[in-house]
Amino acid sequence: MKNNSKCPKCGERLSPFYMKQTCPKCGVNLMYYKLDERLEADAKQAQKEVDAVNRFGDMLKASTIKTPWHIIRLILFFTPLLSMLLPMFWAGHKKVSLLAFILCIVNHGFDFASLTADKSYLFAVLAIIGVIVFSLAVIIASLFSSTENGFKRNMMFSAFNAFVLVMFSELVRFFDGRVLIGYAVTLLIYAFEFMLHYLCQTDKNSRKFRYTVASVILTLALTLTIFYPYAQVIRTVDKSESTLRVVSFNVAAPWGSSFDDTASEDRVIRFADYMEASSPDLIGTQELNSEWLEKLGKLLPDYESYAVKRGGDSDERTSEMNGIFWNKNVFKALETNTIWLSATPEKESRFTFTDKNGKKEEAGCNRICSYAILEDNKSNKYAFLNTHLDNSSEEARNFSAGLIKSRIDEIKNQYREIKIILTGDFNQTSEDKAYKTIAETLINSQMINNEVKATYQEWGYRDTGFLPIDFIFISDNMKIKGCGYLDDLREGYISDHYGIYTDIQK
Picture (cartoon, helix red, strand yellow):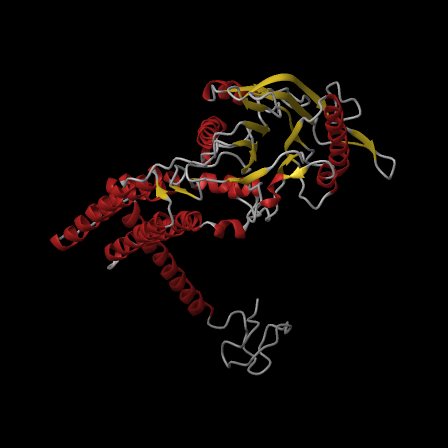
């Protein structure tokens, strides 16, 4: 095979398509001209490359597995990626870890607006990203530990890694977050890294020892920041003795995760504490389940309740109810009932319909409206209704609103001068038809609130707009004294919704 670029003797440039064996200018045989010299040069070059690879391999061995200390250090470099699976921070009103952040993206998608909305959560995520990036940098730098400046380089990268974590953690704390056990474990790992950098040096000297000791002491001191005290917050909502307080709260009982501190078994306690602090007389809950109902019976002893499973759910935990609670020191129940929001309201069923194309469709779930006829200590009668409209079908929501309106009319005909209260998650805003159907009969008690905000917040993982989908309606024979949102998250999320309340003149 001839040289296809130029002649090795005269340097004549050859076309890639030149196929003859001899040079067109000097006539030399292109394949055999000084073949021995060229083969010898190629062999020397190959040996140089082999030597370089061997030297690099020797350097890697000397940097990574030369002694047991080197092996331990190499293993330790990967442990921060594991320690971040532990809760690293309390930020954005929930626990933040690498695992929780991954699950957030998997379950909720990535939403930049929500990430930046809470600064403590933003810096917690940045701290985790920083640990990942700079831990990889430390690993790469360690591969060259046996070079002349290997110790300095290792110390510099490890120190910068620890500095970035501490810097972001202090920003988390500045914006009312706090550090958790994963943060302390990660800093302790960094302290061991500094010691192992020193132990892996063959030319140990007092100066390197002093640098290492100083780095370890500083890292251990920073680790103690996890024990900084933080103030315990008790949620309170002032209430006048002359008012009747009504609460509506989608509690998301079947849902949540222990990874980010939204586990159902923790939130039911927070919910009970919040109700004790805000002292409602009537509570309408959506997405309640039997586990919560049983626990709230013990946690809220001043309340009686009524709840019916809607049916059609996958298991006992996800079998939802629209539970209603009333203060037994204020009310007694005269009647309780539940209707299914379908063509057969007196039995467990789901709304079905035929669309414009003649295809049979149905609501996403069985939907119900539970209610109680209550009498207070002054013999005033109240009809307290609570519902949760469908999440997937506008036709179902519209039909349900019409059915609820009809039942309210029946109650008014049966009980003269009765006061009507309807709480619920409508899964739509005030701009939609189902809301407007109810508004023809009742008054949205939240309309006097100057602040309008979204009541569904998806644990803070996504931007959900600014309009509420949870409402408290009352009849026109009652006077509104105040209203607001139960949105205090300082002790953690209670639900993926905020609660709302309305105070009514007794």
